[in-house]
Image 1 (cartoon, one colour):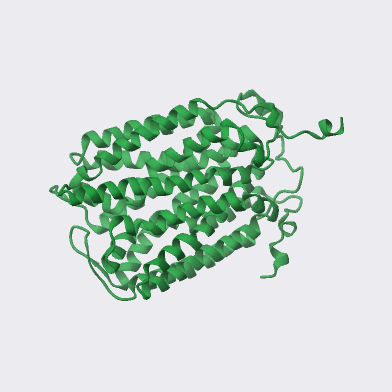
Image 2 (image 1 turned 135 degrees about the vertical axis):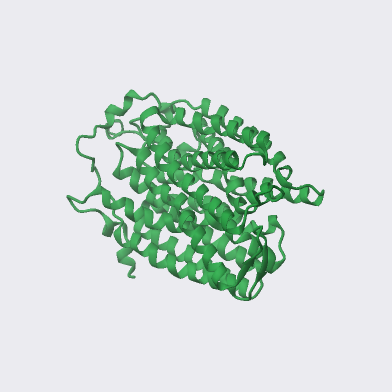
Length: 459
């Protein structure tokens, strides 16, 4: 693919181009990289085949999320400058290449290659691929930014909905066996490596569609009938612009950093360990959870994660970003408390609460770019978003570390069932309360951080 084809100038939409052709391009990338949320399907086979602990098998996922935030922060300005086509192509090469390196790592039983490939190289692909469609859609839908970001990031949440049953069936076909309670009993040589190889090649084809289809609006383009001045009726929505350099100097940026970090931590701890967690919760009950049922639970969480991104984010266009985060953080803390109090007495309550928490988790991601657009304008919103995603990097380590380390310690102490996770749940409640307070502290950005308008420069 010629370098010229990837230039931003080659992807500027011609007059009359329908903005509704851009969401499918965004979804082709986000549905692929959203596979990261199905990592828990690979954890038990890897633990069995390579003799890993729960914390060790979480490392590729944790590093992937760390690299997502770091690469988004480091390359955010370059993504804005080079355009989404270049970014999507780089994302394709890194994300799919990471699967191939991970396949080699499993094949040679060198786990550090799995961590480096899936987590390191693949994580760079996650970060660059994540922010590009988001910033592009905000520019195409300035009149409905919550809905627009919800469309794109819905794909990231929905990626696991596709990957979970697909990966489970693939592992089963290639030689991973389970007992009636969902515990892995055997892994044939090459089974996991072959699954990684197929993933890398299939996603490369899928992501290519986004590279070919994506467009950016011409300078000065606006949707028919849209007037930015009308947004001023909402106190937190600005018509001014703030650069990425200035945005990180504002208290608003750091309040949102805390909000995103703790909302993500509360959800990602469940998501990363979803399959083994539901198995542990109900293993000693009359109706233990099988491997296929655990995979179905992961798929349900992915569905909630995906739908929450479009439903709640679109709702934020109506009721405001600050109010919607009050819902995510406040009700999220209450739902965690219900799980802690009910334990394994009611499986349906556990599932419904977990699904709602994951819907808020996904919605938090989908709503944050629109929140940033409200506060800082569209000027460098992609780069600002990239810097804010360092909160995801921290949460990607913090959430799985809390859940896995405490569960491993409780197992070593001879505990089982919900007791493995009770302490983690109460920690998550505390983090959500802190996030709620941080959201309450958000105020309009001081005018001293605004970029000068053309008229002000001329004076």
